[in-house]
Image (cartoon, rainbow, N blue to C red; front, side, top):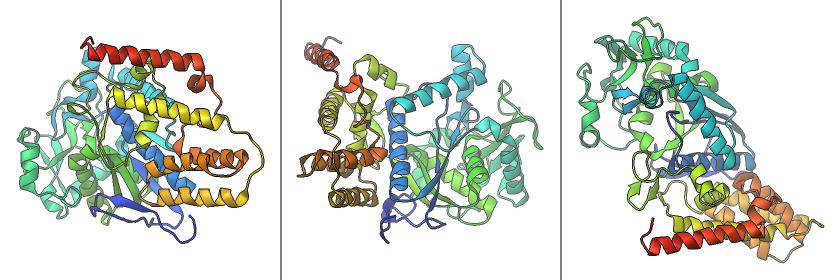
Length: 440
């Protein structure tokens, strides 16, 4: 860290920007919710992972030793967040006539390929839900022993009435949430309370579930929420510094994680909850079920460099919602290509250490200021305009790119090739004309 300055970050738990103070000085234990690998990730999903990547790299840049863990949900995530419907993996298995494990492997590989194209660093530990069944059973048994869980109709449920701070993260009350998720919470008649959630489902729940394991409560499979708690505690220990995820995970997923983790541990589990804003299209939140399914591969097919999308995301505040359109992406790509072209013209000569140190400190200030990625990007332009040697500019921008990860100093023809640039601009013009003529 630079001096005694503390990073400030927006904490969903307290609903304010506050100083970040880890449990152990200089070290950050960070958990990020991974994908449910039943389909391709759309660019809205990937905005979350870009923001988490910038957070991790930003923390490292200002001097923290970061240990980051992410799960892969390959079992247990039901179609309804409130324990209704089929397992999403089973739905995909039926759709594609493959086994759940074949589905999981294919879409996990696709996800990490997307991450690679967007320069998203792979977390230190990536663990699939199916690899941690013993940990879930251990946790669930303790929750039963201490009265936080109960068995009903063969399934094990968490009793939310036993956890007094259940609504703290969402900042809402039971009446508000009842309206928001009425269909899901009223579906399962085995529950004592509407917001109770499944920890373990047996054959009494879904007889056609492909992935099942033996447990003290019968042969079955874990609920979705227990996996993140189990994986985090298993790999990062009993105290977590930062938990990240998309804003739609606040309730019920992260709310349930807190309830079961703190009941299991007997103390506060995570101090900072960082939630990332949705990517919206013109009709609202982007999803897999409506409109054109926007993947990184589709953007490439349409002539976009994936890092143009990363550039677009960097220009917005991670906690705010971001609107996507092709026109907006056209502007981002044009700006990104021009920026990279300017950087690549710089000559690698002498470095002015004072100027270098000054601008590195400015970048650290932007990170400290609630991960202000827009200011980080603005600093690149400021450096290019500053009266200093090319070598100083190049050295500074190379350091900045450890966080921005835009390949600004990487000499690749894909971003600056004039023929390619011309071809992409022609595609953009054709698309605009088609839009004007309503010819899609």
